[in-house]
Image (cartoon, rainbow over all chains, first blue to last red; front, side, top):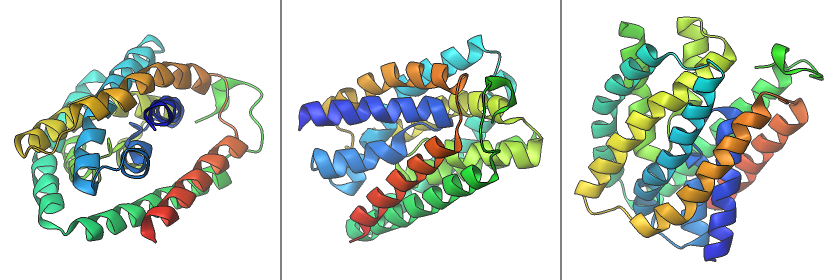
Length: 131
Length: 114
């Protein structure tokens, strides 16, 4: 199970870099279904697990000139207040309700990613016209 | 500036509530409301998530909910994967791949729902 969790972590990181997300959407189910953590512990742990991947990802993106650091700082500062509220909300909800809410969030993300694919042009022979 | 703070606030709630970075919220909002192109939104989102996830992990740690060993087990291989993912992003962004990602998300979501 530990090896499977590490492999899924690696794959989550690849998707994080590829789609510009932190990978947490895959870490949480990995921690719940593979390592048997409760939903709150999985979410807390996912946030820490995200950090090495986003630091590595942001470092690579900076080399491609894709990071606006001032905007990132403002987004990050704004998020701190939201984080405080989100933690309290997660702790206040019964754990099975939180797990189902997370599942609904995942389905919404799946729909949004599918919609992104629908709007893409069929084939990208080169990188300079994607995203 | 107010828009960036507001996007951060919304992303922060989702991040902490669901244990995710919030990029899925930040990237489309940066494109729609601030006029970033996709790559710049992606790169900037990753940097912002560093702050958001650190704040969330710290808040949960104060509640005693953090499993550091499990985080390392999943998170350290993920860092290697992220470097590979960003390199891949410069070369490919196909519909098939994106559809595949959405199917994986939907399947796991349904598994967690039932």
